[in-house]
Length: 359
Image 1 (tube, rainbow, N blue to C red):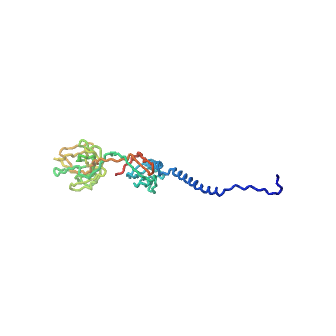
Image 2 (spheres, helix red, strand yellow):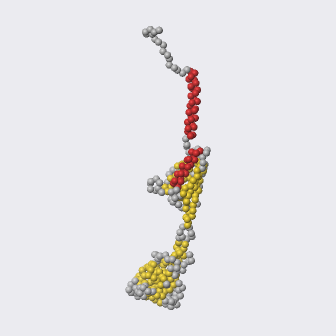
Image 3 (tube, rainbow, N blue to C red):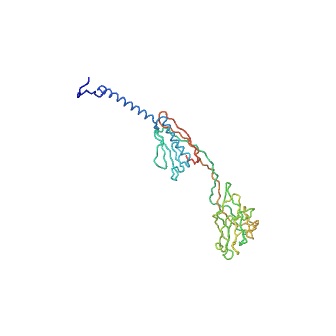
């Protein structure tokens, strides 16, 4: 039946929660929230944080990889203890300066392994460390034998007060004394530091002369001049013979067994100086008087003649054997706290073979 025009028809109301339904929902909501919180907590524990089990092992491994990567290029090492190492490497950050790197652990379980670069603040590279230990492999490398010079000492000398005469030295006529030094059995080299002979002015003190050291062969001087010192005749005593000392600051080192001639030769055409020598009964054991009349082209020696002289010098002897201790490699182990964590071990070879510090 149709409704009449203008008649109001009843409308259906919208659906709504009843009080019972609302109470049930409020009771279920805490359970849902608790479940979500548990899921988040489980998920958070599933994310590696470097402090538990395999995650702690991975953290320890990364720290040791960094240590090994830097240490293998060490150019010097200054500290090598079981829980600390300090070393330098070439520039690693582009500033043109060498890097000084330090890895260290306090030894207290739970403290971190720290890395310090160039004196800056230390940064933890592994946390909750239970053990950290470094071992070092070294070897001894013998060094080349070295020698050291001792104190100045008398190497050769002769003196006499009888049968003495004068040798007039000029540009052609030279004289001297060939000698072999007295050396200790362990000598490795020797050199002359100063010589002395007896001389005086010959005539007017206007000449010049030279005191020379020459190598000697067959007890006669060779053409090989080792060192020389030029002197003015005016520096000599005018009347009586006296000892004249001449220093040699640049005489070369000579091997044991080498013979040398001390020569006085004139540099001017006239008289240069008078040199005293023993003309008879000379008795020097390891030296002998030598002379030339043609400016060193030919030399002669005569038995029983010697020139009073002395030679001082220094002798080199071998130092005790020595060696350097080389750091070849470093063995390391690290364990961080956490259930199921493992000890990470390894070793690194030091490529530059630096000296190991004294222990």
